[in-house]
Every structure is written in C-alpha cells, then in structure tokens.
Length: 373
Image (cartoon, rainbow, N blue to C red; front, side, top):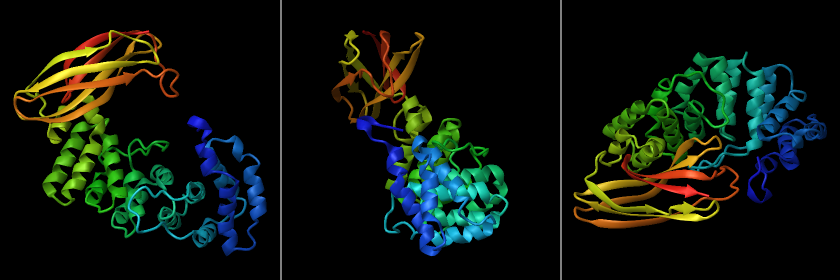
C-alpha cells in the first residue's frame, strides 16, 4: 500500500522498530522472552509482505514464543499490555497498529476458550482497535460474542463501546463478513447513538451508512426515531444524520433528503446550464448555471458525470456542487471547474461522448453532452 511521493503505510506501521517495541512489551514482564529470536524470525520475511499479512505474520511468530495453553498465554498478553489509550481524547485515537497482532493471535488461538478470549479482546481494544479480530469471533461463536457486546455497550471505556458498533458494521473496510443480518446490531446502535464521544458516534454513523446501501428505509426510520427520542445532543445528532446519509444523498434518495430538510420537488427554475463542449484529458471544463427560487428552499446541488468506461459503456459518478438556502425570488449563479486528471492513480479517463446531469435535491434538472478527447 503505497501512496504518492513514495510514502508506504505498511512500512510506517510495521517496521523493525515496531517489531522491537512489540517484543519489548513481553520482555519487560518476562526476561525469558527471546526478543532477538522473535525479531529475527519476524523480520526474515515481513518486509516482503503487504500490510495485513505483516500483522498476521507477527501473530503466527508469537505462537512460537508464548505458552501453548491459551489461558496461560493470555496471562502473558495481559501482563505485557501497555497503558490504555489517553482517556482525555475523544476521537481519532486508533493506537499502535502493531498491537493488532495481539488480536490476531487471540483469534487464532482462543476460540475454544471464549471466557478468557473475549475479555482479553476487550482489554486489547483499549490500546488498539479490535474490530477485525471481533469479526472472527462473530463468525465462530456468534451467540456468545453478541452477549458480550450487549454488556460492552455500557462499558466505561469509549474504545470498548466503539468496538461494539465498528466490529459489527456490515461492510467494514478490510474486514471479514460477519454473517449478521443488518438489523441484528440495531439494539447496540440504539444504545450507542446518544454516546458523548465522537469516536463512538462516528462509528455509529458509518455503520448506518453501511446499512443504507442495502436497506435505506431502515436507516431513515432509525434516524427519525432517534430524533424523536431526543437523547442525543441536537447538533451531534445532526452531524451523525448527515454522515450516515451521505451515500443516500449522493444517490438522490428522496426520504433521506427530506429528513435533512430538502424538498424532493423544490419550487425552482434552472437556466443557462452549460459545460464546455470539448475537454481534453488532463484539462478542466467549466460548469455554469443559474437557479431562481420561487419559494424558500434549501437546495443540495450536485452534478453527475457519466464517464465512459474501457468497454464503451458509461458509469455515473456524483460530485458535490453547492448547498444553498434561497429565499423566494432569489437568483444565484454558480460556476465550477471540473478537472479530468490525466494518469490518476485511482481512476482512468477514456475518450468519448460524455454527459453531465445537474442534480438538485436528488432530482434531474437537465443534461449537457460533451466530448472528452
């Protein structure tokens, strides 16, 4: 996993210094732990691996340096854990990613000792997020794991509370599928939505966004119910609602837009919607239009580019243009340049006949055809 300018995330998160630190945690509580042997065995192959594989390798090698009996190995891990993450922070505190190898170790070795393994996962997540590990347990022992999560929603440590939401997300990036139906974790989300920590509420919102891809009605109804309950701070719930509905908003879902205060059929007229008739790959094209409102309207103005694919078919992609609050009789002119970046790392442009659709509050308000050359 390498980004621009040669930055390597896998080398930042998993390198010899991190492996040495990891081994040192065990040596600090057990002078018989062979730190050099552990480091040599890991580093012999680690740098040839991708990020997730490096974590798995450390867990596999650790099996050679801890007792074979899992309950005894768990005691070694408990003793070696660093202090919990800073309790004064409330967001974006993921801990050291290398400690994720402890979770992989527990998943590999603790499935037959759930009364030992699950409390250990709870302790580790106070130092490094355990959502990937939790999904192994949901797959292998769903009932026991869900029972533990039911207790963890009331945990004093917000990292444990966040794990309940994050670990049960339907489409967690990089995460295993859980086998849970999308509605099954809802009791957890109901309990967590009023949490006072943004790290938790962000996860709840992301969880709902995942659900929205398969059951939009469930998400809109859930957010509406939370609004009526009034348990969460109004501004925080407003942020959560916008974050949870971001995929539905891009799709122009009328129920989602209505919940956010946008009329599905705004009383407006659009004029002078234009785009450059021809744009070269690597250059920019200018979008321009005017909107006149015939009543007081909140408007979510987007545009959809129907990109030509390699096989000649087209695929739409939504881009944000502007949010407006217009009074009756008000007219506003909008202009924006769209760049068709050449040789982008994540998207390839193909020459051909393209189209831009103007989308306001999820409804189409006109199309413009252009050629990308």
